[in-house]
Amino acid sequence: MRMIDLIEKKQHNKALTEDEIKWMIEHYTSEDIPDYQMSAMAMAIYFNGMSNDERSALTMAMVESGDQIDLSPIEGVKVDKHSTGGVGDTTTLVLAPLVASVGVPVAKMSGRGLGHTGGTIDKLEAVPGFNVEVSQERFVELVNKNKVAVVGQSGNLTPADKKLYALRDVTSTVESIPLIASSIMSKKIAAGADAIVLDVKTGAGAFMKSVEQAKELAETMVNIGEAVGRNTMAVISDMSQPLGNAIGNGLEVKEAIDTLKGHGPEDLTELCLVLGSQMAYLGGVGSSLDEAREALEENLHNGKALDAFRTFISAQGGDASVADDPDGVLPKAKYSKDVLAKESGEVSEIVADQIGIAAMMLGAGRETKESQIDLAAGLYVHKKIGDAVEKGEALVTVYSNKEITEEVINKILDNITVAESAEAPKLIHEIIQ
Ligand code: URA
Ligand code: CA
Image (tube, rainbow, N blue to C red; front, side):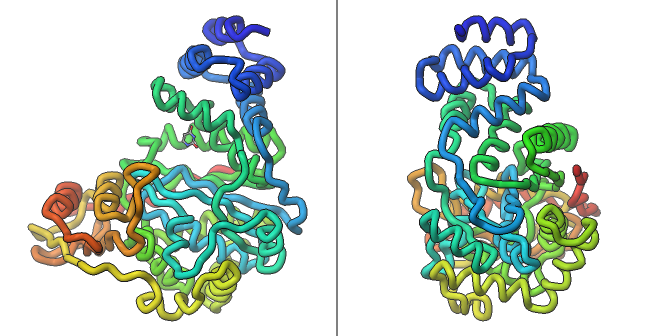
Protein backbone atom coordinates (compact mmCIF):
# COMPACT_ATOMS: atom_id res chain seq x y z
CA MET A 1 0.00 0.00 0.00
CA ARG A 2 1.12 3.55 -0.64
CA MET A 3 -0.08 6.54 1.34
CA ILE A 4 -0.26 8.71 -1.78
CA ASP A 5 -2.86 6.37 -3.28
CA LEU A 6 -4.98 6.61 -0.13
CA ILE A 7 -4.76 10.40 -0.12
CA GLU A 8 -5.82 10.46 -3.76
CA LYS A 9 -8.74 8.13 -3.04
CA LYS A 10 -10.03 10.34 -0.23
CA GLN A 11 -9.38 13.45 -2.31
CA HIS A 12 -11.79 12.00 -4.87
CA ASN A 13 -14.33 11.34 -2.14
CA LYS A 14 -14.07 7.57 -2.24
CA ALA A 15 -14.36 5.55 0.96
CA LEU A 16 -11.24 3.94 2.42
CA THR A 17 -11.49 0.28 3.40
CA GLU A 18 -10.98 -0.96 6.93
CA ASP A 19 -7.63 -2.48 5.92
CA GLU A 20 -6.47 0.76 4.36
CA ILE A 21 -7.37 2.74 7.48
CA LYS A 22 -5.66 0.20 9.74
CA TRP A 23 -2.53 0.26 7.60
CA MET A 24 -2.48 4.05 7.54
CA ILE A 25 -2.85 4.47 11.33
CA GLU A 26 -0.32 1.73 12.06
CA HIS A 27 2.28 3.29 9.80
CA TYR A 28 1.56 6.82 10.95
CA THR A 29 2.05 5.74 14.58
CA SER A 30 5.35 4.05 13.73
CA GLU A 31 6.40 7.20 11.84
CA ASP A 32 6.68 5.45 8.50
CA ILE A 33 4.09 7.85 7.16
CA PRO A 34 5.32 11.44 7.51
CA ASP A 35 3.26 14.29 8.94
CA TYR A 36 3.01 16.03 5.57
CA GLN A 37 1.18 13.09 4.02
CA MET A 38 -1.05 12.70 7.06
CA SER A 39 -1.92 16.40 6.94
CA ALA A 40 -3.00 16.07 3.31
CA MET A 41 -5.18 13.14 4.37
CA ALA A 42 -6.66 15.10 7.30
CA MET A 43 -7.53 17.94 4.92
CA ALA A 44 -9.13 15.54 2.44
CA ILE A 45 -11.20 14.08 5.29
CA TYR A 46 -12.03 17.59 6.47
CA PHE A 47 -13.56 18.37 3.05
CA ASN A 48 -14.99 15.00 2.06
CA GLY A 49 -15.95 13.48 5.40
CA MET A 50 -16.10 9.77 6.18
CA SER A 51 -18.74 7.06 5.93
CA ASN A 52 -20.03 5.31 9.06
CA ASP A 53 -17.80 2.31 8.32
CA GLU A 54 -14.75 4.51 7.88
CA ARG A 55 -15.42 6.31 11.18
CA SER A 56 -15.67 3.04 13.10
CA ALA A 57 -12.55 1.69 11.42
CA LEU A 58 -10.60 4.85 12.24
CA THR A 59 -11.77 4.74 15.86
CA MET A 60 -10.72 1.12 16.36
CA ALA A 61 -7.42 1.61 14.50
CA MET A 62 -6.58 4.41 16.95
CA VAL A 63 -7.66 2.27 19.93
CA GLU A 64 -5.29 -0.45 18.70
CA SER A 65 -2.39 1.98 18.21
CA GLY A 66 -1.45 1.81 21.91
CA ASP A 67 -2.22 0.28 25.29
CA GLN A 68 -5.76 -0.70 26.19
CA ILE A 69 -6.92 -0.76 29.79
CA ASP A 70 -8.43 -4.08 30.76
CA LEU A 71 -11.27 -3.46 33.19
CA SER A 72 -12.62 -7.02 32.89
CA PRO A 73 -11.56 -7.87 36.49
CA ILE A 74 -14.16 -5.30 37.61
CA GLU A 75 -17.62 -6.81 38.00
CA GLY A 76 -20.50 -5.14 36.20
CA VAL A 77 -20.89 -2.87 33.20
CA LYS A 78 -18.16 -0.21 33.21
CA VAL A 79 -19.82 2.99 32.06
CA ASP A 80 -17.64 6.00 31.28
CA LYS A 81 -18.72 9.59 30.79
CA HIS A 82 -17.08 12.14 28.57
CA SER A 83 -17.68 15.85 28.40
CA THR A 84 -16.50 17.85 25.42
CA GLY A 85 -15.30 20.46 27.89
CA GLY A 86 -16.81 23.41 29.65
CA VAL A 87 -16.34 26.12 32.23
CA GLY A 88 -17.10 25.27 35.85
CA ASP A 89 -18.16 21.79 34.77
CA THR A 90 -18.31 20.08 38.13
CA THR A 91 -20.31 17.05 36.91
CA THR A 92 -17.69 14.29 37.26
CA LEU A 93 -17.09 15.13 40.93
CA VAL A 94 -20.78 14.61 41.54
CA LEU A 95 -21.44 11.76 39.12
CA ALA A 96 -18.65 9.43 40.21
CA PRO A 97 -19.95 8.92 43.79
CA LEU A 98 -23.61 9.40 42.81
CA VAL A 99 -23.61 6.66 40.16
CA ALA A 100 -21.49 4.41 42.39
CA SER A 101 -24.09 4.86 45.15
CA VAL A 102 -26.67 2.97 43.05
CA GLY A 103 -24.22 0.12 42.50
CA VAL A 104 -22.80 0.90 39.05
CA PRO A 105 -18.99 0.73 38.91
CA VAL A 106 -17.28 4.00 37.99
CA ALA A 107 -13.68 3.34 36.95
CA LYS A 108 -12.66 6.71 35.69
CA MET A 109 -9.49 8.07 34.24
CA SER A 110 -9.51 11.83 34.07
CA GLY A 111 -7.27 14.57 32.83
CA ARG A 112 -5.92 17.88 34.01
CA GLY A 113 -7.27 21.22 32.88
CA LEU A 114 -5.84 23.40 30.15
CA GLY A 115 -6.83 26.92 29.12
CA HIS A 116 -10.32 28.01 30.10
CA THR A 117 -11.56 24.53 30.98
CA GLY A 118 -10.78 22.73 34.20
CA GLY A 119 -9.85 19.09 34.78
CA THR A 120 -11.29 16.68 37.31
CA ILE A 121 -7.86 15.50 38.48
CA ASP A 122 -6.85 19.04 39.49
CA LYS A 123 -10.14 19.55 41.30
CA LEU A 124 -9.73 16.37 43.32
CA GLU A 125 -6.24 17.44 44.33
CA ALA A 126 -7.83 20.38 46.17
CA VAL A 127 -8.83 17.80 48.80
CA PRO A 128 -5.81 17.46 51.12
CA GLY A 129 -4.11 14.07 50.75
CA PHE A 130 -6.08 12.92 47.72
CA ASN A 131 -3.93 10.73 45.51
CA VAL A 132 -4.62 10.49 41.77
CA GLU A 133 -1.65 8.26 40.97
CA VAL A 134 -2.89 4.77 41.59
CA SER A 135 -1.52 1.53 40.12
CA GLN A 136 -3.70 -0.41 37.71
CA GLU A 137 -4.07 -3.21 40.27
CA ARG A 138 -5.10 -0.90 43.07
CA PHE A 139 -7.51 0.91 40.70
CA VAL A 140 -9.35 -2.35 39.99
CA GLU A 141 -9.31 -3.25 43.69
CA LEU A 142 -10.81 0.11 44.69
CA VAL A 143 -13.61 -0.08 42.13
CA ASN A 144 -14.49 -3.64 43.12
CA LYS A 145 -14.59 -2.63 46.78
CA ASN A 146 -16.20 0.84 46.66
CA LYS A 147 -17.65 0.97 43.11
CA VAL A 148 -15.64 4.12 42.42
CA ALA A 149 -12.12 5.37 41.76
CA VAL A 150 -10.93 8.37 39.74
CA VAL A 151 -7.30 8.40 38.69
CA GLY A 152 -4.96 10.25 36.36
CA GLN A 153 -4.22 8.87 32.92
CA SER A 154 -1.57 6.22 32.79
CA GLY A 155 -0.16 4.04 30.05
CA ASN A 156 0.34 4.87 26.42
CA LEU A 157 -3.29 5.21 25.31
CA THR A 158 -4.13 6.06 21.67
CA PRO A 159 -0.72 7.40 20.56
CA ALA A 160 -2.12 7.71 17.02
CA ASP A 161 -4.72 10.16 18.31
CA LYS A 162 -2.10 12.17 20.20
CA LYS A 163 -0.03 12.56 17.04
CA LEU A 164 -2.99 13.22 14.77
CA TYR A 165 -4.64 15.71 17.15
CA ALA A 166 -1.40 17.71 17.42
CA LEU A 167 -1.09 17.67 13.63
CA ARG A 168 -4.71 18.76 13.14
CA ASP A 169 -4.14 21.58 15.59
CA VAL A 170 -1.55 23.19 13.31
CA THR A 171 -3.16 22.34 9.94
CA SER A 172 -6.64 23.75 10.57
CA THR A 173 -8.26 20.32 10.50
CA VAL A 174 -9.50 20.05 14.09
CA GLU A 175 -13.06 20.96 13.22
CA SER A 176 -14.03 17.86 11.33
CA ILE A 177 -16.85 15.85 12.86
CA PRO A 178 -15.52 12.38 11.88
CA LEU A 179 -12.06 13.28 13.17
CA ILE A 180 -13.34 14.71 16.47
CA ALA A 181 -15.76 11.82 17.00
CA SER A 182 -13.16 9.09 16.38
CA SER A 183 -10.63 10.97 18.53
CA ILE A 184 -12.97 11.11 21.54
CA MET A 185 -14.42 7.62 21.13
CA SER A 186 -11.02 5.98 20.70
CA LYS A 187 -9.85 7.39 24.03
CA LYS A 188 -12.93 6.15 25.91
CA ILE A 189 -12.70 2.68 24.38
CA ALA A 190 -8.96 2.37 25.03
CA ALA A 191 -9.67 3.32 28.67
CA GLY A 192 -11.82 0.21 28.95
CA ALA A 193 -15.40 1.50 28.74
CA ASP A 194 -18.16 -1.04 28.04
CA ALA A 195 -20.71 1.75 27.68
CA ILE A 196 -20.31 5.48 27.14
CA VAL A 197 -22.32 8.58 28.06
CA LEU A 198 -21.40 11.76 26.21
CA ASP A 199 -22.06 15.31 27.34
CA VAL A 200 -21.73 17.40 24.21
CA LYS A 201 -21.65 21.07 25.15
CA THR A 202 -22.94 23.85 22.96
CA GLY A 203 -22.68 27.63 23.22
CA ALA A 204 -20.01 30.29 23.67
CA GLY A 205 -17.93 28.26 26.12
CA ALA A 206 -17.99 25.14 23.96
CA PHE A 207 -16.20 23.62 21.04
CA MET A 208 -19.48 23.23 19.14
CA LYS A 209 -21.01 26.68 18.95
CA SER A 210 -24.42 25.67 17.57
CA VAL A 211 -26.94 23.05 18.67
CA GLU A 212 -26.97 21.60 15.12
CA GLN A 213 -23.20 21.03 15.13
CA ALA A 214 -23.35 19.56 18.63
CA LYS A 215 -26.14 17.23 17.58
CA GLU A 216 -24.26 16.04 14.52
CA LEU A 217 -21.17 15.31 16.64
CA ALA A 218 -23.24 13.50 19.28
CA GLU A 219 -25.07 11.37 16.71
CA THR A 220 -21.79 10.50 15.01
CA MET A 221 -20.28 9.36 18.31
CA VAL A 222 -23.37 7.37 19.27
CA ASN A 223 -23.26 5.63 15.86
CA ILE A 224 -19.59 4.77 16.27
CA GLY A 225 -20.22 3.43 19.78
CA GLU A 226 -23.07 1.21 18.69
CA ALA A 227 -21.12 0.00 15.62
CA VAL A 228 -18.17 -1.12 17.75
CA GLY A 229 -20.28 -2.77 20.44
CA ARG A 230 -20.37 -0.09 23.14
CA ASN A 231 -23.80 1.12 24.19
CA THR A 232 -23.61 4.88 23.88
CA MET A 233 -25.96 7.72 24.78
CA ALA A 234 -25.52 11.47 24.59
CA VAL A 235 -26.86 14.71 25.98
CA ILE A 236 -26.56 18.09 24.28
CA SER A 237 -26.20 20.59 27.09
CA ASP A 238 -25.84 24.33 27.35
CA MET A 239 -22.44 25.95 27.79
CA SER A 240 -23.42 29.49 26.90
CA GLN A 241 -22.80 30.30 30.57
CA PRO A 242 -20.70 28.50 33.19
CA LEU A 243 -22.30 25.47 34.84
CA GLY A 244 -23.36 25.91 38.46
CA ASN A 245 -21.95 28.86 40.39
CA ALA A 246 -18.39 27.85 41.17
CA ILE A 247 -15.41 27.96 38.80
CA GLY A 248 -12.06 26.89 40.23
CA ASN A 249 -10.77 23.72 41.82
CA GLY A 250 -11.46 24.00 45.55
CA LEU A 251 -14.62 26.01 44.94
CA GLU A 252 -15.96 23.29 42.66
CA VAL A 253 -15.27 20.57 45.22
CA LYS A 254 -17.43 22.49 47.66
CA GLU A 255 -20.12 22.88 45.01
CA ALA A 256 -20.03 19.15 44.30
CA ILE A 257 -20.47 18.40 48.02
CA ASP A 258 -23.48 20.73 48.19
CA THR A 259 -24.93 18.95 45.17
CA LEU A 260 -24.37 15.52 46.71
CA LYS A 261 -26.27 16.77 49.78
CA GLY A 262 -29.21 17.61 47.52
CA HIS A 263 -28.84 21.39 47.62
CA GLY A 264 -26.51 22.20 44.77
CA PRO A 265 -27.16 24.69 41.97
CA GLU A 266 -30.24 23.80 39.94
CA ASP A 267 -28.50 23.48 36.56
CA LEU A 268 -25.62 21.36 37.85
CA THR A 269 -28.01 19.11 39.75
CA GLU A 270 -30.26 18.63 36.73
CA LEU A 271 -27.39 17.87 34.35
CA CYS A 272 -25.96 15.36 36.84
CA LEU A 273 -29.33 13.64 37.09
CA VAL A 274 -29.73 13.48 33.30
CA LEU A 275 -26.20 12.16 32.68
CA GLY A 276 -26.32 10.01 35.79
CA SER A 277 -29.57 8.35 34.75
CA GLN A 278 -28.02 7.41 31.40
CA MET A 279 -24.97 5.98 33.18
CA ALA A 280 -27.06 4.11 35.73
CA TYR A 281 -29.47 2.79 33.09
CA LEU A 282 -26.61 1.57 30.87
CA GLY A 283 -25.15 0.01 34.02
CA GLY A 284 -28.33 -1.98 34.55
CA VAL A 285 -30.22 0.11 37.11
CA GLY A 286 -33.95 0.33 36.44
CA SER A 287 -35.86 -0.60 33.32
CA SER A 288 -36.03 2.96 32.01
CA LEU A 289 -34.15 6.25 32.28
CA ASP A 290 -36.91 7.52 34.59
CA GLU A 291 -36.47 4.61 36.98
CA ALA A 292 -32.71 5.10 37.00
CA ARG A 293 -33.24 8.76 37.76
CA GLU A 294 -35.52 7.99 40.70
CA ALA A 295 -32.83 5.82 42.26
CA LEU A 296 -30.29 8.64 41.92
CA GLU A 297 -32.65 11.29 43.30
CA GLU A 298 -33.33 9.12 46.31
CA ASN A 299 -29.62 8.84 47.08
CA LEU A 300 -29.10 12.60 46.78
CA HIS A 301 -31.62 13.05 49.55
CA ASN A 302 -31.01 10.08 51.86
CA GLY A 303 -27.28 10.70 52.33
CA LYS A 304 -26.09 7.65 50.35
CA ALA A 305 -24.50 9.72 47.57
CA LEU A 306 -22.57 11.74 50.15
CA ASP A 307 -21.52 8.53 51.92
CA ALA A 308 -20.18 7.20 48.62
CA PHE A 309 -18.23 10.45 48.24
CA ARG A 310 -16.69 10.06 51.71
CA THR A 311 -15.68 6.47 51.02
CA PHE A 312 -14.23 7.42 47.62
CA ILE A 313 -12.21 10.32 49.02
CA SER A 314 -10.76 8.44 51.98
CA ALA A 315 -9.95 5.33 49.89
CA GLN A 316 -7.64 7.50 47.79
CA GLY A 317 -5.99 9.09 50.84
CA GLY A 318 -8.08 12.27 50.96
CA ASP A 319 -9.48 13.96 54.05
CA ALA A 320 -13.12 12.82 54.02
CA SER A 321 -14.10 15.37 56.68
CA VAL A 322 -14.22 17.75 53.70
CA ALA A 323 -17.77 16.45 53.22
CA ASP A 324 -18.86 17.96 56.54
CA ASP A 325 -16.60 20.98 56.76
CA PRO A 326 -15.55 22.04 53.23
CA ASP A 327 -14.62 25.57 54.32
CA GLY A 328 -12.34 24.25 57.05
CA VAL A 329 -10.63 21.64 54.90
CA LEU A 330 -10.31 23.13 51.39
CA PRO A 331 -7.55 25.63 50.54
CA LYS A 332 -8.50 29.23 51.26
CA ALA A 333 -7.56 32.22 49.11
CA LYS A 334 -5.79 35.20 50.64
CA TYR A 335 -7.88 37.76 48.79
CA SER A 336 -11.49 38.00 47.74
CA LYS A 337 -13.43 40.75 46.07
CA ASP A 338 -16.98 41.24 44.84
CA VAL A 339 -17.59 42.42 41.29
CA LEU A 340 -20.60 44.70 41.49
CA ALA A 341 -23.36 45.28 38.95
CA LYS A 342 -23.19 48.70 37.34
CA GLU A 343 -26.91 48.76 36.61
CA SER A 344 -30.16 47.11 37.62
CA GLY A 345 -32.01 44.65 35.41
CA GLU A 346 -31.65 40.98 34.49
CA VAL A 347 -28.47 39.19 33.53
CA SER A 348 -28.70 38.47 29.80
CA GLU A 349 -25.25 37.14 28.97
CA ILE A 350 -22.30 35.51 30.76
CA VAL A 351 -19.73 34.62 28.12
CA ALA A 352 -18.55 31.25 29.44
CA ASP A 353 -15.15 30.94 27.79
CA GLN A 354 -14.13 34.51 28.69
CA ILE A 355 -15.21 34.00 32.30
CA GLY A 356 -13.18 30.79 32.24
CA ILE A 357 -10.18 32.81 31.04
CA ALA A 358 -10.68 35.28 33.91
CA ALA A 359 -10.56 32.35 36.34
CA MET A 360 -7.42 31.09 34.62
CA MET A 361 -5.80 34.53 35.00
CA LEU A 362 -6.36 34.24 38.76
CA GLY A 363 -4.48 30.94 38.76
CA ALA A 364 -7.45 28.54 38.70
CA GLY A 365 -6.38 27.17 35.31
CA ARG A 366 -3.26 26.58 33.25
CA GLU A 367 -2.13 28.85 30.47
CA THR A 368 0.39 26.22 29.33
CA LYS A 369 0.83 22.59 30.30
CA GLU A 370 3.67 23.63 32.62
CA SER A 371 1.76 26.34 34.55
CA GLN A 372 1.26 25.84 38.28
CA ILE A 373 -2.32 26.18 39.39
CA ASP A 374 -3.71 27.73 42.53
CA LEU A 375 -6.29 25.35 43.96
CA ALA A 376 -7.96 28.09 46.04
CA ALA A 377 -8.39 30.56 43.18
CA GLY A 378 -11.53 31.03 41.17
CA LEU A 379 -14.88 32.70 40.79
CA TYR A 380 -18.27 32.32 42.37
CA VAL A 381 -21.00 33.46 39.99
CA HIS A 382 -23.93 34.75 42.09
CA LYS A 383 -26.19 35.74 39.23
CA LYS A 384 -26.94 33.52 36.27
CA ILE A 385 -28.68 34.38 33.01
CA GLY A 386 -32.27 35.40 33.71
CA ASP A 387 -31.61 36.41 37.34
CA ALA A 388 -32.64 39.88 38.51
CA VAL A 389 -29.87 42.09 39.84
CA GLU A 390 -29.79 45.49 41.54
CA LYS A 391 -27.13 48.08 40.82
CA GLY A 392 -24.31 47.61 43.37
CA GLU A 393 -25.17 43.95 44.05
CA ALA A 394 -22.43 41.33 43.67
CA LEU A 395 -22.46 39.58 40.29
CA VAL A 396 -19.37 37.51 41.01
CA THR A 397 -16.97 37.01 43.92
CA VAL A 398 -13.32 36.66 42.94
CA TYR A 399 -10.91 34.49 45.01
CA SER A 400 -7.16 34.65 44.57
CA ASN A 401 -3.83 34.33 46.32
CA LYS A 402 -2.45 37.07 44.07
CA GLU A 403 -3.64 40.65 44.36
CA ILE A 404 -6.81 40.99 42.35
CA THR A 405 -6.11 43.28 39.41
CA GLU A 406 -8.37 45.70 37.54
CA GLU A 407 -7.62 43.64 34.44
CA VAL A 408 -9.46 40.64 35.90
CA ILE A 409 -12.34 42.71 37.26
CA ASN A 410 -12.79 44.37 33.87
CA LYS A 411 -12.59 41.06 32.05
CA ILE A 412 -15.49 39.84 34.19
CA LEU A 413 -17.52 43.03 33.81
CA ASP A 414 -16.94 43.05 30.03
CA ASN A 415 -18.36 39.57 29.73
CA ILE A 416 -21.50 39.85 31.82
CA THR A 417 -24.36 41.83 30.35
CA VAL A 418 -27.31 43.18 32.29
CA ALA A 419 -30.38 44.03 30.19
CA GLU A 420 -33.91 45.07 30.95
CA SER A 421 -35.14 41.50 30.87
CA ALA A 422 -33.72 38.13 29.90
CA GLU A 423 -34.60 34.46 29.99
CA ALA A 424 -32.53 31.58 31.30
CA PRO A 425 -31.17 29.43 28.46
CA LYS A 426 -32.41 25.89 27.98
CA LEU A 427 -30.06 23.53 29.85
CA ILE A 428 -30.69 20.27 27.98
CA HIS A 429 -31.17 20.72 24.25
CA GLU A 430 -31.45 17.10 23.29
CA ILE A 431 -31.11 13.56 24.57
CA ILE A 432 -29.75 11.07 22.07
CA GLN A 433 -30.05 7.39 22.79
N1 URA B 1 -11.39 16.66 21.73
C1 URA B 1 -10.73 15.54 21.40
O1 URA B 1 -10.41 14.73 22.26
N2 URA B 1 -10.43 15.32 20.12
C2 URA B 1 -10.75 16.18 19.14
O2 URA B 1 -10.46 15.91 18.00
C3 URA B 1 -11.44 17.35 19.50
C4 URA B 1 -11.75 17.56 20.79
CA1 CA C 1 -19.45 24.74 38.63
